[in-house]
Image (cartoon, rainbow, N blue to C red):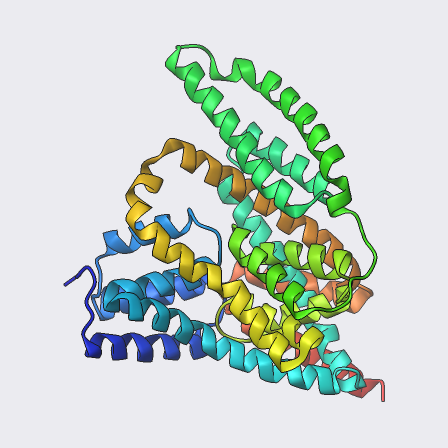
Length: 401
């Protein structure tokens, strides 16, 4: 039976053990994690009903952050109260953080060896294929008409020319919300909704030119910034507080901040960080642990992890009493649609940029295309493709000796 906020010790222990096990075994991305949670909490353990589970999914889609992690936090809260909120999230995040931290140490220690470089030589094309498959899957869901297509192309072009990622996400949400509001107003007046769309998107272009003029300096490549723990914390806190959409949108933020603005990472190191995030179980946001270790050692890894996940705990705690109102608001729904469109465009932009680094010869192109074909044809866990790519890299290394 579903209960509102049970606080019994046995429920807290149940939350602890369940999310620890899930944290160590959850491979395949957010959709896979959410499916595993549903099978356990709805079908096997019967913590909540299927209808309630779907309500939770709708609610977490309205707030920034990693959806699967926020779902774990929310389920922990519903099952065991405020302690369950903290314990559920920490137990789901913890295994990924520890495994990523160990791999970050190994990478920093042995990453320059030929064997390790060839390992990532085979993994990077698979990461590109995984991103491509995510973009294709999202496009089938999101691209429902001309407004979505126009906004996607607009955000993609502006991202590629260097406009700030935050402006693109929030600007895309606002402009799409305005267009949807105009459509609703036209329908209420019994006028043709499509009559104003060309004017609306003409206005969009003018508004985006103004936004670009004001924000170009924010998105431009700048001089290197000296390393600081405070800057590291604030940067990851900002990312965790404003990021909507799939975990792959994280790449756009990481590249804009750590590669282009701070100059603390190279594109190659960013791809390696994403590969490690794919290889390990749990949330892709554990990539922050890897990056934190590369730039700031053990303390940097722990600080980066805390910063990027902290907003998720706060948002879940705040959104619970507002959940019904947020879910029913047509304006909030339109804004969320706009964020999703902009997020997909950002993912496509990152795919194009990182692909230039990862696809360097015939073999890497072959690996990427083969991995994409497998992902599109079969429901296979992405970790197996990561392992296959790593094996190909190692085999090629040994053949060249």
